Length: 404
Image (cartoon, rainbow, N blue to C red; front, side, top):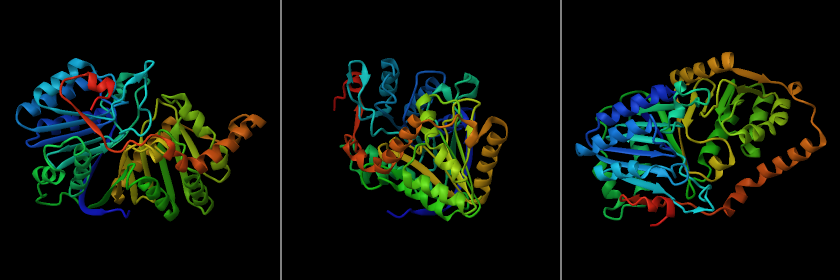
């Protein structure tokens, strides 16, 4: 489906939890009508506890608060935490809660991976940052490097409408369009002049929108492409587009994980290095701490920030959301932040910097490329997870047993 671009938006780049959490908490504290949160993870820690308090306080003063978490990512939230929200009037929803089997979570595929906050239909936050202390740099060497954006303007209505479509799956008391009219109020003025679009991936009508948009701007690039992504294992077509861009003279830079929180992420990405490096793509590994961002810039005019990795889970299975931004000032700001990482906290990978490939590695490489060519079709074999929510009423068993 075509991307819907809107004018008159304002964006503020937020880096790491130190910038993101205070901005979100302050906006919730000022809310007068509604707060909507979608997130993959909430932990009961030094971030989750103040989040709970501002949500409880908002509900107490009459604000309608809806919080949606993923049944896999937020499977271990304590009962006391849940009850305190529900008892205060917060509507807490869980996407695809499933029972554990032999102690393991079974809802690995097709997760709600988006990170969205919408306040009073006027302000939104989008990015890759979960509500967890490991997004605070002060938390230590395993703190995640990540980004989000604060948004005002007409684009907020598009983001909110998307969150309401998901909420309508668990709200049978009021029709979706009734909820939408009740919540949304027209923006009286345009706070900025930025053109932007809200692009999602789901298991219905938008199965590959984010990937298609990436590929479009890569093919159209004339000078430079910088992609900084935590989990990089995209399809063959996107890899080919990157290589072709580099071969026609575009400076293509990838910033990937050098010290990943999940070791398999780097192992998978390195299987692609030879193909990309031989085509002129520059690969930098971020080595300061785990990298969790999902951002990119092209030609100093286009940028994206969101929840979507460039791996099979994000591109073919999960529910994801990214903002696409056409603005030189914002793209320049994000580019400057990424340049700082490259200059001081990354190492450049070179074709001769790793041991010579042996026959085993060559065989693995053949398997990887066949996998990447065919994964979009294989994704249909996994259980479908179209929007389906369980609203908790204080019964923690619903979270762990997957009851409707």
